[in-house]
Length: 324
Image (tube, rainbow, N blue to C red):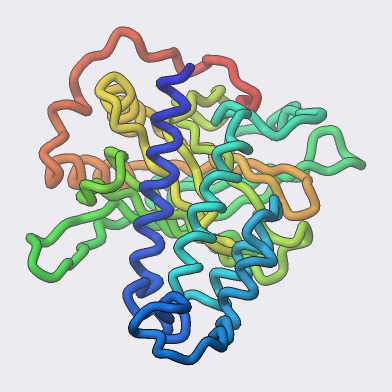
């Protein structure tokens, strides 16, 4: 347990530090770097220099347990060193909130969504399916919406490094006004203890539930109606509608995740909306997705590892709270 908590702590802080790099932390405001009173640089004037706005604001929020306040602080004072401290505080709060296992919803009643899944949705084989199952208090079976998925191999160009590729999916669900982008990429950042990173972006301007507030994890399943098996990793909310899932870099977890990504045909993405209702987005690979992952694994030099037999993987009907 201690080792798991230490791994989680390092993982969260790694992701927070990576995010902070984009905040241009080197551009610290001059007023936030004033020399201490009484130092030679402060001069002989005994009058205390006025504190910066960022410093005053940080004093007011540094002990808060409300992540929203810290996120607002980072947005307002992103070019100050105090933003770094706020991100670290956010990481501490998120670690404390991560006591619930990755593949469970927050405390409270957990309905199976849907209780009775409908018949398999027809497909022409060229447009893989996406199915959204939404919790509905007035309907124990929930609501079901059908959309489609477009898969492609996406090139990633990084200055000073060889070209990289990602497995990219775009989910389109017109009946719900929902579009989701998903990018699976190999992690090349040595400061981030993850084998792969999954970026999730939800574009949902008409979301009845106020949008997606939390994505506890990602599961893999063998078919549309099977129960899912969670990928070992950690999900972090980056900003509104944007989430990052880092997959565990522990050897046994890494091998298991590669097998699941390679062999299972469907993804389950459980969601908690802002109004605390729940939903599941099921996404089919189909033939296009299978080819995209095969190409990506080959480019990453991981195809043989993904194809290697592994007797310890759970079956396609393994139980979990999201499974159907």
